[in-house]
Image (spheres, rainbow, N blue to C red):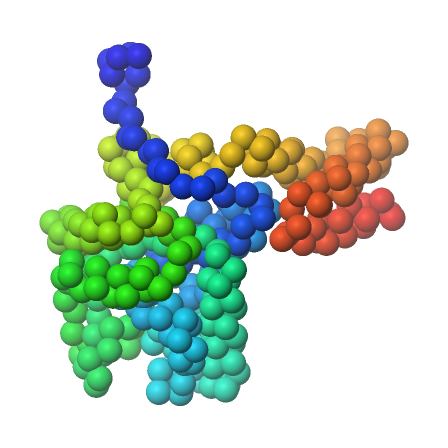
Length: 326
């Protein structure tokens, strides 16, 4: 098909990896785009884990992973108190607690789990958002989040390509896990268009170097799909910055074509059918036909459980039992 007939330029999305199945564990980390992709995996019953919340810069991510691998737990020195809550300089605002001990217990448990998953050869899905970082002036530490502290407490700068490569090289030399890097298509326009493009370019070149050095490291072009293939504001949310649901669906489908086997793709379709069945609202209430329909859905779940051993179907089964016991 010619470009004229196709009405768009298509991005080459091929990546050479061992196909991902429901037997694998998948760790997601990085920007909000990583969270968006994780929701698809979770919806289709993969084992997913996100240890840090949304973190945009690549250095905090690599430092956190290194801590987990060396069992160097987070301590009180890495916390700050904002009014009555404690937060971590190394995590997003997702993690907070009125008790510093409880917060440390939570984030260190996440570290232990991450280390275990890496040892189990979990796949790592890592999305870089920006190469702009904020350094806390008291100790020159790059932080994951400023947590609404005064700007005067930080110095901001753009990372060097070599900094990113060096930081991640030290990790990738020690693991054989499949790593899929992406760059978030979300533009950081508070920095302006020009600085945003310089920031993204730094990330592109750093990932390119890592892919050249390591056979188990791969790049998926989510950024290019949105910016160069879809390239229309109808594929953006109302803020004109984040991708719309249609765009993320499209990127998910492109990713699925590359990382799943035919058997896994067929299983995903079966799960999608179950999800649609569970969301069905009967027009005429609790008729015999609807009871049979929902009973058949329960049977489908029981038949598929052995193929999705890392997923807990208890919520869906409880939902059905509540309906059947009315």
